[in-house]
Every structure is written in C-alpha cells, then in structure tokens.
Image (tube, rainbow, N blue to C red):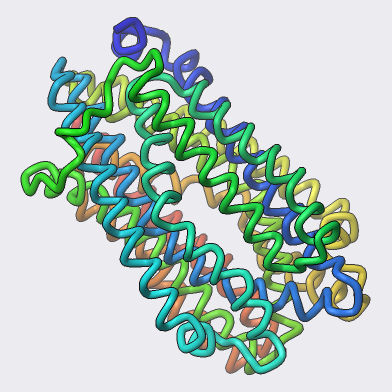
Length: 445
C-alpha cells in the first residue's frame, strides 16, 4: 500500500513526475512506433504516396476503434484509483474484472463488424478505388486482433490505476520496441506491404495482453484478476461507463473529425491532401503524445486525492500539469518551425506531397502551444467525476466548434481553410476551458 500512501502525502510535483514520466515515455515510444510505421509505409517503392493516403483513410476508423478501447480502460482505472483512495481493495478488484469483461465483449463485436462490413465502412470514410486496397489490408488485420487488444489495453491501464506506472510504461515501451523490429521484417523482408505493418501491430498488442494478464494473476500485483470477477456486473458497468463516456465521446469525436476532414480534403485537395494530412497529424502527435501521457499521470493522482477528499492537491496537480504541458508544446512548436522539411521528410520524399504537407503543417500547428490547456482541463473534470462538464469541453474542441469551422471556412479559403480549422477550434476551446476551470476553483475555495 506504499504507492497509495504516497498519492495522499507525497509532494505533488514529485508525484506528477513519478506518474507522468513513465506514461510520457510510453506515449512517446508509441508515437515513435506510429511515426516509423507510417514512414515505412510511405517509403514503399512506387506506391508510397498512395499507401500513406490509404493509411490516412484508416485513421478515423482506427480512432473510433480506439475510443472503445481507451474509454472503458479509463473508466475502469479511474474507478480503481477512487476505490483504492477510499481503502476498498475488494471493490477495486471487482471493477477490474468487469472492465476486462466489457472490453472483451466489445472486442468480439468489433471483430464481427470487420468481417462483414469493412469495405462498406472504408468507402464511406473516403476510400477511393486507388486507396481501398491499402486501407483494407491494414484494417482487416487490426480488426481481427480487437478481442485481445481491448482487454490488454484495459489491464495495462489498471496497472497505473493500482499505483505501478513504471511497469505499465515498461510494457508499452517494450511492445513498441518489438514493433520497430517486426515492421521492416513483415513489410519488406516478407514482402507483405501495409498488411505487414498491421500484423506487427497486433503481435505487439497480444504481447501486452499476455504480460498484463500474467501480472494480475501470477505476478506481484496489489490487485488480483480473479475469474469470478470477470463478468458484466450491471452495477459496476454503470460506474465504469459514467466516467468512460467522456473519453469515449472525445475519442469518437476525434475519429469523426478525421472522417469529416478526409471528406473535405478529398474535395479541395484530392487523395494527395489526405496523405499530407496524415503526415501533419503524425507530426502533431509527436508532441501531443507527451500531453496524453501527462494526463494519464495526472488522472491517477487527481482521482485518488478526490476520493480521499484532498481537493487542494487535486487542483494543484492540474495546474502543474498545465505548466509542464505548455512547456513541452512550446518546444515542439519551435522545432517544427525551425525544421519543417526534416519532419515532413520522415513520411515522404515525394516533392508534391512534401510541399503540401509543409504548408499544411505551418497553418495547422499554429496554436500547438495552447492545446494542452483544453486537453488537460477536460481530463481534470473527468477525473473528479464531473461527466457533463468534461464531455461538453471535450466535444467543444473536437465537434461543436471544429466541425462547423471545417465545413464553412474551406468554402472561403479552399485547402488553406481546412488547415486553419483546427487552430481556430483550439483557441476558442482553450478560452472556454479556462472559464470553466476558474469557476470550479472559485467554488472549491
């Protein structure tokens, strides 16, 4: 119980570093894996530009798939932290069992959807006759691995929830390092192309599932995964979903905006612009991944202290998180401005695609330094159980503002309007999140 005691009493700055740095490292390695994955695909001889555009088509679908994975995991791990903060270990174990059961059920449903409806979904998401092959080859494998990917991700998140962030990060880092080895073997060595990249991914997801399961059954975990608890307990599913609903809609909104963006890009820039946006999004994620890692560390600390009625510590955790996140994003913004060709060159050597991506990046990442405020502010409300506020603020950035902007602005400014939509949304969302946080802190005082 040493980790739980530290959550209540240890210096907030030290705690934030302790819990966030492993998650940040894991996220950065994941981002590196995604970057290398797309770089390998983009370098495929004679088809690189089309292949990365096909991969871009899968991004909204991949994000929507991830919305189930992440949301249930967050709902489960947050409730585990709250239960441990209340000193209720047995209930925390039951929450973990229901979380795994729910992820497994959703994973099986996703497998079936992929078998029967994949092509129809990909065409609806913007695939053309030129890109459908690459999109299908990738997502058919990803869908097939959902039944173990979702429970494995949930268990890894539960490891953080029980107070062992270093192990959770070590699992992610090891998995991603393995993927970097497998990618070139499957893509080039076995000449499997984009399908090889997907096979490497699902092998690493299976690796996480097996390791996490071992840890909670035969390993030195504080909580234990017991067969009797792996069931869809109606009461526990409800409290998981209450918290899960916010990250679910946030991830779902992200997938939806990718879908809308691809449709608009196809109108104003064709297949090539979808490939350019894939590169820009990948570059953005290089710097946003640490923020997501920071949010995971914050979430455990905030949820535990909220459960323990230490509201001042919860507030201080958020403020320090925003400070650290803003510093990270400012550094990223400076690097992108100084070396645009280097970043875009990771994904393509095609001159037309590179020029389009550089122009898009310069506009799209203009508000990168302030993005952390809206992301972390939303996570704060999620961690303290303020579901409605958290959901509204999450949807504000990704849906309520962004979708109308991305539909209207390009009608006046064409492709540049598509690039400009995200920074417009980020600025307005940051303003609203700041107002909500000010009112919340005033209420606590």
